[in-house]
Length: 342
Ligand SMILES: NC(=O)c1ccc[n+]([C@@H]2O[C@H](COP(=O)([O-])OP(=O)(O)OC[C@H]3O[C@@H](n4cnc5c(N)ncnc54)[C@H](O)[C@@H]3O)[C@@H](O)[C@H]2O)c1
Image 1 (tube, rainbow, N blue to C red):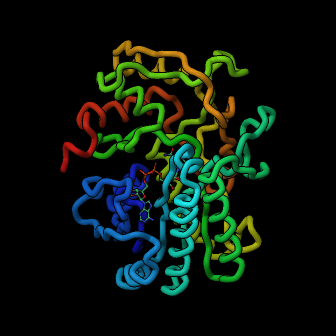
Image 2 (cartoon, rainbow, N blue to C red; image 1 turned 45 degrees about the horizontal axis):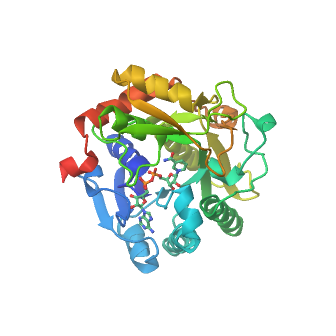
Image 3 (tube, helix red, strand yellow; image 1 turned 135 degrees about the horizontal axis):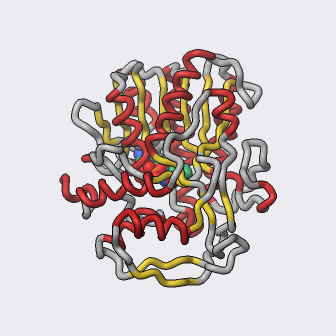
């Protein structure tokens, strides 16, 4: 199949490119490199440096490569930055997605898998754990809203376009690297817990700060659901295949749209992840206690039973240590990230 991967030079998108390319699909990447790395895209994959908001140029790429399915990862994805720069987030994430949909419409592409997020649910109460897809969506920051607005536009477009079908995956915390250590996580700035711990283990950070140890959880630190990036991408491939099989039927949204929460179905506390990273790396890096951050719910973990029931997918990595091991392999081989490969 001919697949466009938007954001294919980023952390998750590059793992999708690797998998799809390895499976024999013809892959084209669009990425403006605002956050991605050219070196994350393998040789043999067409790379187009382009901003998604350039609708005509995106349409040309779709037509030229006969694209049959779009995997749409491209976005700005820092919660804190979205609070400080809301217009940039709406412009890039909503504007970029609307531009992509206009191009999809013009080129007649019929399938899309969209990267949404558990941030669209906001701060569900502890009694709503594990979180299923029917929870009310009440984002608490512009990042979450930008994804929810895009979900809404996808629903409405699919209702108006009966032969267009999509899957929106709502991710929890994505972790780990390709098992062969060839590509990995290199966000700049890095805000994700596991890379920060591994940078501390490499001596690149003096200490790690735990944001709040007085939450109503067993050890007082926040609990999150971590899903390995290769499992996450597998769920995208399964979704793409389901879109081929079912065409426009079977949607949740009145049109051809389906929504799935992607996690492993259990949470790990910040303290548990720190301990696991120390065991994997063998380094007893310094940890300091800090204040809570605004908008950090005590617990967020997924109920992934819907995707198991409907698409037969479940995660293969279910313990945090094995996820961290893959990330550690990448960090040891690329201590400065993709700078090494430039
Ligand atoms: N990392 C996580 O734990 C997580 C959790 C939930 C959802 N997500 C979603 O998954 C997707 C990928 O996340 P990631 O961690 O790989 O982020 P990333 O920053 O590594 O990748 C995003 C890529 O999109 C590109 N991009 C951004 N705006 C663009 C535009 N207008 N035009 C073209 N390219 C553009 C960036 O250059 C980058 O390469 C995002 O949509 C994010 O919201 C990630």
